[in-house]
Length: 566
Ligand code: GLC
Image 1 (tube, protein in one colour):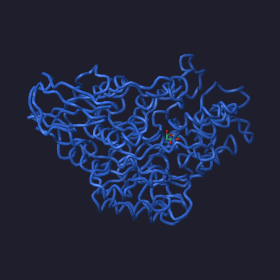
Image 2 (spheres, helix red, strand yellow; image 1 turned 30 degrees about the vertical axis):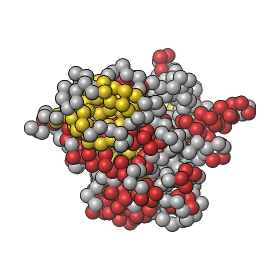
Image 3 (cartoon, helix red, strand yellow; image 1 turned 45 degrees about the horizontal axis):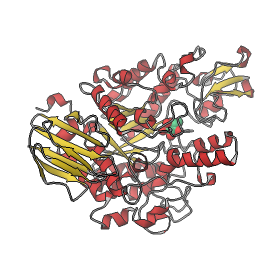
Image 4 (cartoon, helix red, strand yellow; image 1 turned 60 degrees about the vertical axis):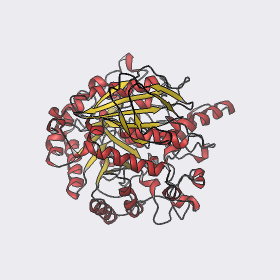
């Protein structure tokens, strides 16, 4: 019966993302580290997690918190040593979990040996590892950069009188995948970690790796939004296939690409299993939903609508209905906290909306990814002062804007909702100083709400906590195959406040009803639900333990209910 489901361990896994800098400090330097993570493995296991994804832990000057790697085969000293890494990996395996790492190979750090060599002379053996534009050819055609003070991706380098390309900060020069040697270096690096026993990679901005190396003028249509242009390099799929053939397919691993600019129409090119490229990727449609169309890091004026949210998830589900596989996430290290963004972090609605969102991710088709702290409902930190921010993205944008008091006020207000640092504050373990994260001074301030029940220790003691709900909900997903593989069908499509759907797998059927509203809601179980059912879980006691056709359900604010249909 289950053979045509194309069952795979990575489809059935629940993934937990750890931002190492902020998870647990073991040596009082204020920075999280590998030994800290090792100390917390029992906790992670207790959540029902199968796979841990570690953000970059390699040596790096930390211009972009580790996404600028200066040595791909080592460990950043702030985080520990390779022995610490080996112990962490062994601890993960002993507990029956798996570990995936972050592969940042669109660019390296400018302090990587390759770049140091590359910039020395035009005939250096490493010259062609990066994208160079000789200055005698004039100013290169415009390319946009994310973290450049002038949004200019070409940086003039005096030493060889040429420009190099950097789609992110000036300290993150783009690697030239068109050079076969570069690709071989990267495959070797991947092999190195696989040989150590690592179980896969999350691949940073993998959609950007291929470039048109004639560097033509950017077509007009991409001037407003260059991302789809970057994401459609001419040799992208050739590179992904080659990487699969040369390395990935020889190991039992999982891959998930970060893929800004990739549309639904292009999705299967990445993950159709017959094409042998990647297993899954993260699209950016949800992450753009509440953003200004012109300025990604700004909130849009009218806030997002549940109907748009439903359409988005339904359409993406349809993409993978027959082939490929999706990934599900509501936040990560680049975006604000899920409950503050998609739920409601006011004291009144925080518990219900945090658990409702967990229910959502764990009852959809696709592999669920949770970001550390999401299991206890961590919220945006909402810093009031620019001095509190650590992220290059916020700091650079602040520096380049006109510093009028009005601008500063609205900038800070916007960042409270969009800044990446909202989700990078230390894990809230207990009520002791700095939330049990460190005995030193934390590298970024802790969210003060750890003192008011928003910490692991308090939630362990409290039976009806976000944490306990998370554990229950994870267990429910894992013991009901239909919640993983079952067909998804949206119901009550036009309802403005309630998101409901069924999941069906052969004889198994489930009904999921989620209120996204701070007001009570009513729904009528009409013919769409052709039978009765029994309650599997709800985040509110008022839920009926059985439902029948044609019943009316009253939903509390942000209530979630999951029924198994008879
Ligand atoms: C990805 C990472 C982000 C980083 C960027 C550049 O989007 O998730 O944190 O800044 O790539 O590497």
